[in-house]
Image (cartoon, rainbow, N blue to C red; front, side):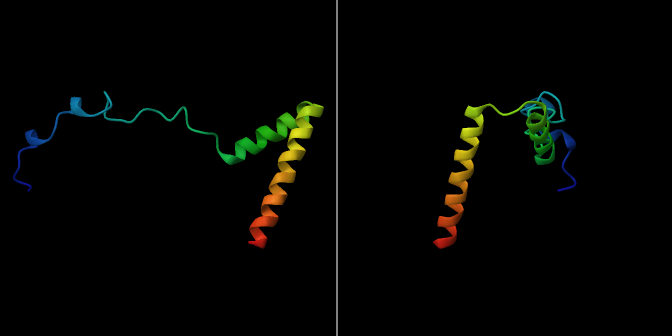
Length: 73
């Protein structure tokens, strides 16, 4: 194996990326901590509109109902 010449390796141009290094992860999702901080900022910076509050209450109610059904089953 070690006696093979290095020329037998595929050239760098055959890689999916033009450069050996992978592209930067700029589009990666935010970490949970920063997301929570963002939620805190938005919650404190502006009061929730009635519609938004209603939707949030609905989501919380559904989540509680789902937890109860999961526990029962």
